[in-house]
Length: 378
Image (cartoon, rainbow, N blue to C red; front, side):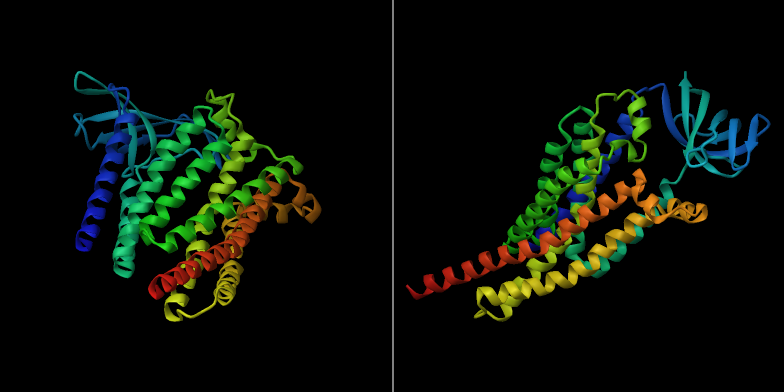
């Protein structure tokens, strides 16, 4: 039976990837007359572009050769609208592979618009390297991790985000999503065991306490959901009734959840291993061991969060240094305050997860052990 588990998980993983890809293609091409197709740029016309420093405004005309679909092999002229936003705009050159929104009439491409450079192939190659390395090192555990990866993506993409867009309570939706993700991820990796129960309970308890801190200090710091990337664009795309502040709170907790699961699993698995090697260990000794492991893990994990969040706003920090901004002014800047809030709330959640998991493990593991002893002595 155990030999069938890994192939079954692998089949389910592949089926999930195929289903997600086909479903995404179907939803993306909801207008059957307009399809997104891969094409190679053969020529460009930049005469209508106005350059102002690093920004470009105007229209780039692009001649492309379509590489897929019913119009494969056809040539069409496409437009590439530039808005003066370097972080969003793309410039094409002959030989580039691009994704085109193509209007098709009677089997002929009649119009096209450049969407983005086609990056999917290299993204899949990088993902393939990740999968190979993970499977070589972790083997069956790596296969389970891939299954949880795909499942987590599906839950976020098809349940969490649509729920937010529909106007559901972001806080309640976050609680449901995190509970579901925690159970799926930890169970996929550790299976149905005491370690799974301990790590799941420790993660959820720590995250719920972090959520309480999020709601309290978020109000005190007078933050706004508009500090999140693309928040303004989302509102002006028609979603005027969204509670962006609560959505920002949801993103804070969701961002810290992965590290919280990691710490809970480290502590739970370590304590289970200690008990298996020393069955006569007392509950207090086991909990102290868990605390020691937790201290070591949280000592590096909190710094990991700081580095991860700082890396995302590196150019902003560089700008502050260039302008000679005072440290006090920088700390009170809205974007900086939001990132400090995100980092510290996530760090508090991580620190709370470790001792909570250690206490739960001591109670559950030693309680189970003592029950077995009593049962054997009857």
